[in-house]
Image (cartoon, rainbow, N blue to C red):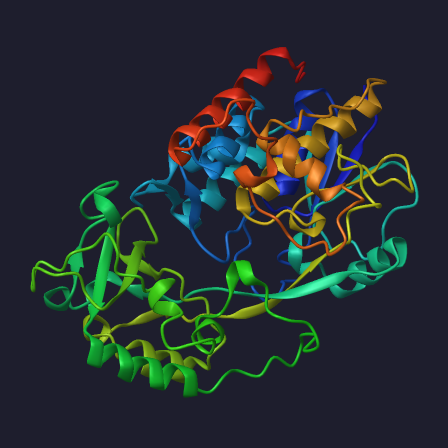
Length: 435
């Protein structure tokens, strides 16, 4: 019987790490603090709860997000496998029914003989044994303080989640269904158009709307660019959101025959299509202000909000110099970190780091050398980024082709270049022992 490993945190990274260990014959204790204690953003008891969005980004292998998921499949990802069991239409993206997604993964954990799920809060890092800290960007205060002591400081940024409305409350006479550039299914998105006058009125109210107080958060820290509140983005200029989440390119309003001045896209939130997410509308406005301002879209005049947007603090360690590319902590053998707390950004990025941390923890426990993936692979590039000591201003990073070494041949066509980079990455796995 192999020694036990403690995985702290039942998010995507913790679940992936636990399964990689269990598959290698390691007994795992997976400690999840819900429902004993909830973070400011989590509301359900289930594992792998998605908060910011239900989208796991692009599915095409020729995209950075798609390549990462393809690599995760090769590594036996339970999070990717579960996503295909409860996906909802989202054009070229892989989006899921959040509740079903959590239910599926929770069930898999509960039925794995080598994983023991314990519902308790861990407030201090155990001093001995093999431990993987996968507590995510919303680590509880007590454990965060202990991590900060261990690491000599931490960083934090604000993150925000978008509102959700009921499908039946959307006025479809003022909306139309279509995917941008006709990618994906015709009804994957509901599009809520604005003409120039409507947009200008909406913009004025948005930038002057009242923001919710953030008593429990560190107000000295800034807003992270990757999940910026819509009101903060709008404050940067009248056209900023019209070239961002409200961009009308690739869409034509059948009511006018022309491209709208601005468009809010709604993405299906669950498989039944009874709820829709306001894409790109992460926000920290007061709930009453969200109702008032977002209802200015003609299609949302009578919208029923199932959930309003919320804002929470995300915490991550200054990984370069602290972690190796195996996600092992350099100052203590047997201690690993995984997930957004390491500085990878995104659901699948977090899950993939859990895969690598789990594999390497298991390898160490069985006397094997760590798995250091090549920089030509997307997961390898991410692991090298978070451990790169030459980075001077470390910030969270998601999957990006910019992280990969360039091809030997110069290819001007970006789409073809990305496809070649993806092909090269997947070819590298043929020469890697991933057991």
